[in-house]
Length: 212
Image 1 (cartoon, rainbow, N blue to C red):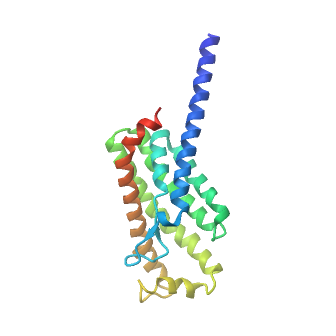
Image 2: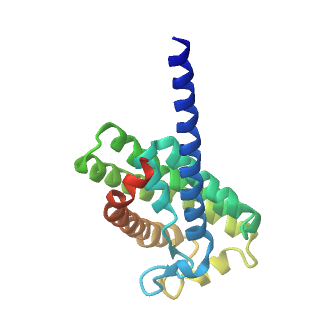
């Protein structure tokens, strides 16, 4: 009996060590995708130039599918904490990215955890995309834009100037209508689609490694 308990403890320890190692590797990849400028790109003809397409949620989503929602959310949080010493937004941007990243990964991983098949993966990613886009509206409306309006040189004039080339008729009064529904919503849906497609293409290839 004691030998069985000892073996179970050793297996649990190895599992914990392996899981931490996998989370660390995926977090490093996520942080690289999040921090390195040339791994991001903008679509200035469609969206304001400061909205970057980046894929740092990809390792977190893969981690969430393979190790569960807690692991996926941990990757999101830690990659943002890694970037915070380099912040240019007093960590407000990184906090917004934590909220939005968890909104993407958590529902996707929870659904897949209970339905581990292609249908579950697709439903999870669709739920994650919808949550990501919906939460992104509120994060920008209630947190990010008020912060930038308060602390940027020029305040609202600077913000409006940054979007006026793509939304020529924008004013402070109409800003949120233009920016949230013509910018943030379709932009985050596009980001969610791209990350989900890459996850769908890559997960089965990397899954055997993550389940060793």
